[in-house]
Amino acid sequence: MSQVSILEKHRKQYQPKVPPSLRQGIAKVKVVEGAAAEPAKDRDVIKKSFPNTYGTPLLSFQAAEAAGGEAKALRIGVVLSGGQAPGGHNVIAGLFDSVKSIHPQSQIFGFLGGPSGLEKGKYETITAEKMDAYRNTGGFDIIGSGRTKLETPEQFDRCIEVIKSLDLNAVVIIGGDDSNTNAAILAEYLKAKGLSTSVIGVPKTIDGDLKNPHIPVSFGFDTAVKTYSELIGNIARDAGSAKKYWHFIKLMGRSASHIALEAGLQTRANVILISEEVEKRNLSLEQIVDDIARVISARAAAGKNYGVVLIPEGLIEFIPSFKTLIGRLNDLLAKNEEAFGKLDTTDAKIAAMSGWLESDGPTGTGLAKTFKSLPKTIQLQLLLDRDPHGNVQVSLIDTDALLAELVGRKLKSDSAYKGKFSSQRHFFGYEGRAAAPSNFDADYCYSLGCVAAVLVRSGRTGYMASIRNVSKGVDQWAAGGIPITMMFNMEQRHGHLKPVIQKALVELEGPAFKALAKSRADWEVQDAFIYPGPIQYFGPSEVCDAITKTLELEQG
Image (cartoon, rainbow, N blue to C red):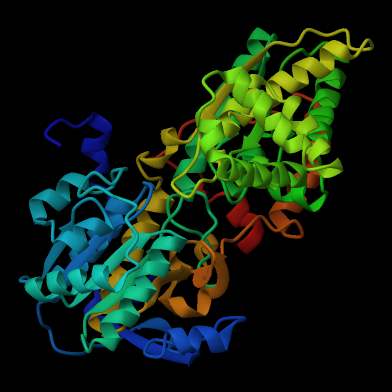
């Protein structure tokens, strides 16, 4: 990072704000134990799987009068796991500063390329000079990330060899629900093997689906959705200027629609699809298309042949009929793998699949009808884009193109429609994952790093760093630790019941969705767009330290 922009130069000087309990340094933090924490369900099974780390207490932090405990050097390994999220570098900075404040000989080892770096012993010692180059910056490029899952005893044993060779007091894993599940499993394994090494998780994902009463928001969501909202606002302004395009915008969020919901609240797009609502209302693809066409027709009648449609990345999986189709395609492709592989043309593959679907009887005939109604590009994506387990990779399906084309067909067949329909398509994902963190994420992530250091210093393991009351300003933020096992439930994964952290979907009875539902009918025909503009780092607190609409509504 020898070359930096003027903004980066000034941004490096920003000192993140931390909760009151952490302001005198982590040596003066008192860890207060609460009640033993247990999951909401599947308790017996989870307890049996985690006998050494189950039922540990909730932890809260208080500022102490004097330093407590021995001031000894700590050796901590850190892992960035999964996709990038703005603020990851500040988690490491908070961890680095905290352990150095205890003892100058403390060291942070960054494992390169994610969990595989821990397994293979590939690491880099993070120096003060290197850390200073990455403060308040986006991305995970300080050590890189990866998606390797640590699941087998052989993998864990290799991790133990690395942990012992570096004499680590702790491993801090910065990741999402799957990564923190792995953190809990590693913590249990180390404990069972008699190691005192702590394993601490930090909640990360821009999708916003890692949250619960103790984890109000995962880091990175604030920055990513503000970045997307800026772009959506720019497009809405362009649409209102050119007055000739409908923009179909797909947004990241395969399992949950938090990004689409928040971006909709921030920008007031004309159509805002929420996957969880589609599933709850049992809407078909045809019904979704009809509803979008209805809005376009209404705006055309008002002389407005332009607008913005927001689409969650995982929408297809939430359409009940489409989910059934995808499941059947998976089965038929597995069953007819050899025959399908011998087909050498696109038309032959589509025809063969249509025939196999129809051979299922009345149910298959309906699925075949749905399959045949799709654009050829979508049919091919459903047939050819497979993951290692033989499943359709729905994140690669061009849902924006699918809806734009089907809406165009619908309008063309409607004799009452007199408008002009032209579409533009966009997918906003990578644009926000490595953005420079907002003040909120810079503060939140740095504080999470400090919390992780306190948990390590107090000898805890199998915990996730937690900060609550984040909607009320940093002066009221409350820091602590949450046992990861209390977030578990048992789910079927690849044919086996496994403990996992349940993804938090959009709550249709929650205040954020209700606020959207109350207003979006007015936004359909009116030009009620809001243009959020770029993230601001300097200026009035109401601009620079603003939280998301979702957090304000849910927690405020």
